[in-house]
Structure formats: C-alpha cells, structure tokens
Length: 558
Image (cartoon, rainbow, N blue to C red; front, side, top):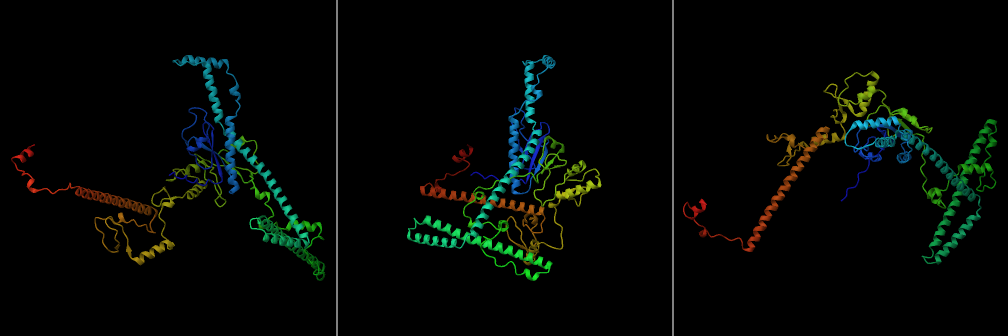
C-alpha cells in the first residue's frame, strides 16, 4: 500500500531568495533553508553547468520579503513566488545578445589565438574560429545564468503590479458593494412608503395560492409551493422594512428632541422644547430629502434569510486584492535595491544584517519580538560559538547583545565547566519548594503505596521496600519505570531500556513458538508413521551379538 505524503510544515509569511556567489544564479524558496529540490529551478544550459547537489558555501542570502501575517498575505506570497519564477523563465528564454557578444573579434586577437594553437601541439584539429565559437557559447551561458539584477527588478515589478491590480480590484469591489447597498436601500424605502393595501393584496394572493395547492396533486403543486414561499418572503420583507424605517424615524426624532432641549436650556426655554418631536408615523411621504439621506445612512440591509435573490457578490467569490502596504524587503546588501528603477511607496526596504549560509529567523506573527539585524562582525562571529565562549573580548554593548541572543537560542553557561555552554532544555530542572501537580500526584501515590515496582528478566514480581536484591541482578539495569522526578536524560534512558526489554521478550516468545511448532511436527510425524505400520517393535533375539571376534569384529574393523 502506498504511503501518504507527509504534510509540509508551515512556511510563514516570508519569501526568501538566494544568489550563487560565482554565477549570480538565483533560487527562490518559501523556507529559510535550501535543499536539493530547489536546484530544479535552474535551467539546463549545458554540460557541467548545473550542479548535481547543493553546496551551502556557494549560495548566499540575497533578499527576504515579509508580507502581512494574514490569509491575504499568504496568498500574495504564493502569487509573488509564481510571478517571479515566470519572469525568470522569460529572461532565460527570451534575451538579446550583448554588445560584447555581437562585436567581432579583431585580427590582432585572432592572430594571437592562432599562435597559441600552433604552440599547443597535439593531435587535436581545431581552428581559431572553433575557439571563438566556444568562447561565445561561454559568454551566452554566463549571461543566461546571471539573473541577480533581473530578479531584483522582477521583485519590484511584481510588487508594483500587485499594488496596481489590488487598487483596481478594491475599487471594483467597493463600487459593486455600493451599488448593492443602494439597491437594497431603495427597495427598503419603497416598501416602507407602500400603503396597507399592499398587505391586503399579499394576504389575498396567499389565500388563493393555498386553496389552489390544496386542490392539486402533490406533484403538480410543487411550483405553486415555491411561489407561495417567495410570497411569504416578500411579506416578511415588507414588515421588516416598515419596522426598520419606524426605528430609524424614532431614533432621529429622539435625537432631534435632545438637540432641541439642549438649545432650549441654553436659551432658557426648556419647558417649550419638551412638547416637540412627537407623533412619529410609518409613512414617509412628508419627509424631505435630508430625511431620505438619513435613512440611507442608518438603515441596515436585508438579513440573509430575507434575500430576494442571490447577489452577484455572493454568487461569485470576491477576488483577493493585494497591496504593497505592510510589505518589507530585507537585503543582505542594501545596495542591491538600486538594480530596480522604482519601488512601491508602501514597501519598506531594510537591511537583513550579516548572514552566512542561510537567512536569519524572521517573526511570523505580531506577537513575536521584532527582528533586529546583526550589524557587527564581532557579534556575528561570536554567535557562531555555540559550545564554548569566544576566545576574544567583546565590547560591552556587543557582549550584552550576544548574551541576549544566546538566551533566545536556549544556550546558558555550564555550571561545572568554565567558558562552556549547554542547551537549557537538556538540563535537569532545579528543585523548588513548589511542585507541579504531576509531581505532587506521583509523590502521593508513592507514599500511599509504599512499594517500588521493578522489572526483572526472569520474573515481573513486585518487591516491597526493604527487600534485598540479589547480587547478580542490578536493579538500575532493569528498572524501566518512567517517574515524574526523572530528568530528560533519565527518561530517555528508561524508555530505551523498556524498548530493549520488549525486544528480548518478543525474541523469547518467538523462540518458544518455534520450539512448540517443532515438537508438534514430530508428534504428527510419529502418529502418521504409526498409522502406516512403519513403527514396528524390534525383537531382541534378532539383534546380533557384538563382540571383539566374529562379525562384530569385522564390522568394528571396517
């Protein structure tokens, strides 16, 4: 059965680019580190030009693009990766020869090549023009592989295009939503302006449909049932629209009453202001244009269950529009950003800091601490020492930053060895007065039981405390219990002993089953021979006398 592919780890909201130190080839990656699969991005430009394996000393970080930590940012990262690879493929397939390639060789250079060929000797037949053709091919290969400047220009073009397309899509989406909002508001106001005669007509039509449905068979009444359902929705929309308008009018009247009372208090006429603003009605024929504008601003759209038809923005999912705001491009060499003629206004260009073979860890969410690039060579070199302290003295400011970064990496000073570091997660936890609930529960169980369980090779009996262990049996070798108070190393050792013991038990069981099968096979063979009469009792009188003389001697001598 074919095994399912393992799920890829999360890649974060970053896109990474690496550049070859010799050929300026560029690789794009969604993860911080490269692997051999990324070499498939390189074109086949001829023999001995495509590396079979990845060498980390040949690839250095070029830039890292950080996008907003949202779902739209993740989609924008994938779209950016696709566009960059497509642009690079176009650069590799469609190119124009440079001036140096188009310029013919001078006669002086041709004569020099001819003298080199004559002095070379050997049996290889080659002319000067063969050498020129080979040099031209090397120049073409070098030009196709050199994609550093093109990749940076492609990144700027991709961000500009995403920003322009995002702005256009946002305008289209806003216009579509505004038109949908205007249509719904107009329908709500129209329903609210209608008289009570509309309600009577709805009720009459509903009654007629119900009577007609009752008189028809079940199969023929299905279209009428759909019509009746839509009529009920229309009636509910009518009630809902009138209710919303009434609520809006009451809110406007209450606000006007409060304003008039405030003005009256200022003018000393508070008693007369309280009598205004009463008598709100449902009809809005007497409202002015300002009142209609107030309704358009404050009315809510129809709820989902009262939608008369599926709107266009619900029928087709809205496209995700990208933007350059919040995008950060970090450079290993800040001067490389000048290869692009223009960058979007919302893009931030920042230094990546000193790097070596891989990109530094960038924050994937706003909760993580902000990225601080390494700008000092001494700080970068000191962080390469992970097992012991550096053998030179750092300035005070750099030393503090190095210690802080080592703490983030999980490194701490060794308690016993001077100038040595160790990972804190592999050290035993310090004993404190407060115990965790798991340790407390384990201690209570040990105190209540008062026994110590141990697994032996010959038996799995439980021995009480105080019982002496046999001299030829080492209790720590067979004690495979994982206790809460164990350190990480002790837990791993105990688990390893458990696995070893399980393998030994399985081996013993397999050998026992094999012996049992062999015995059963012998018994079955004896029974079969007895049934066939092959098992006969031998008469002792028929056995010849074996002695030193006679036939026995001859047999013995032979």
